[in-house]
Length: 291
Image (cartoon, rainbow, N blue to C red; front, side, top):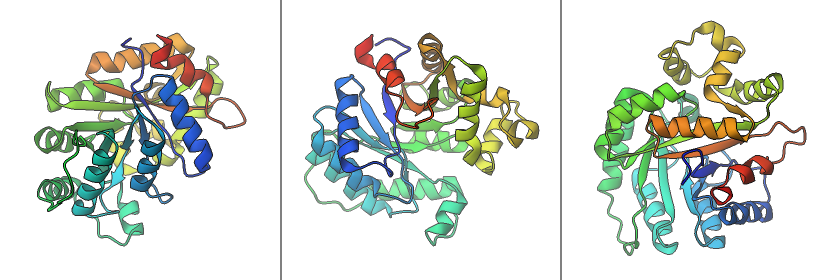
């Protein structure tokens, strides 16, 4: 595979019809994408949605990216992952994350320090008394991990880690902590737009929701960003987190993530067009089938 080719795509589907979800999943599969990653917000249940997509595709892997550990207990997650892997030929991937205190509180839970919460959750999955048939290929378990302690936990108890909205320097450090034998899945926002002002405006708008979250600010600060970068998403911050430009520029950013240690790069498509539909021109141009 071309090092500048993404492995998969992260797609929020809550505003999409079932027919549109099916059509987009089949289109991604036909383009040669390996996986479709689904966020777990406050819309459709991510496990049920994954099963819906898996039932309508034949090769595409479907991942929770990420399933909130405050949304369901460890036994429920183990049951769901095992069932989906069994029923769909091992094409399900379990991505887990603690998310943020606000999300836990909205679900009526007390926030627990992330490493302690995730360790207990992973141990709960491993010990879950699930008695359903064994899948042909067990679902790999990845955890969202940005700080060194969660990355070390991923190396100890999971199949690898997922990272999101992090600069390439973070990928190098994450690989050092994970070691050579664990997967590192990097989500990279991408915008096919060579106009710097327009591309940065798109990136700035998309990043706005994350600028006030302390967990992201702490990580970005480790790589030299300061409060001025966070106030309105500086050009420097946008350029570090979002791959924009022509196809060659975006492929170069994907390749840089792989060179830094990413096992897989999932693109998060940002659309520079005013209509707001998926940017299929970029998705098709970057697809593995276009190599």
